Image 1 (cartoon, rainbow, N blue to C red):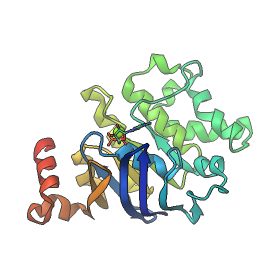
Image 2 (cartoon, rainbow, N blue to C red):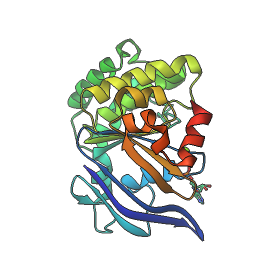
Image 3 (cartoon, rainbow, N blue to C red):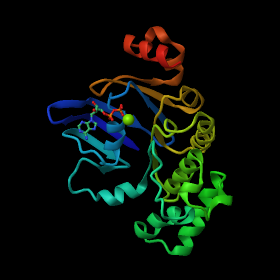
Length: 243
Ligand code: ADP
Ligand code: MG
């Protein structure tokens, strides 16, 4: 579903991704962790070309993301993305937030978009809030709306960039619960997070990326958590700090 081959990226003279290769199959849940500034956000953004790369290839469901001829709006419409900050439209109701891209990007009718959006809103347990505005919801609720909005587009893969790190601690669980359910239902997911409880529950693989955008580990969660002696010193060091 996602195939990154030897991807490198620089900001000016500074290399932020170094020869990154990642392969994600349908139904995989791949957790990406690593220290601040190591390139996690950059890596995940290259998947839907929100960040261009200078070297390497990125394929998503057979589409060459790195090819300048690729229809990026079409690609992005199929790749769901949830950021740290929920980025809902503050002046639109929850229902309007759920439907606008379906109508404008996918060309769905208002009725179809609403039906699909409300179905996804129900899935994240927020049907009662359909007529509210984002400012009337808690952070955790807003993030669940953001997930429902992404799901409304029928994505082939979902990308998450630290979806719980801006939330008050008591709201982290409700967002992770939605993500765990999605994972168990077979959604293909690439998730930047330091929530190792989530990784232990549903990750098929864990990737550890170090400063300079170097992938130091890419292994099953059982190897990642269960066999510390097989891990790189930098990974052990990082795990000791966050666990
Ligand atoms: P992470 O998400 O792991 O914290 P990022 O992907 O955000 O890391 O950043 C990786 C590196 O790239 C950092 O050193 C950061 O300062 C740098 N960086 C990120 N965005 C830009 C940008 N637009 N211009 C220049 N440098 C950037
Ligand atoms: Mg980041």
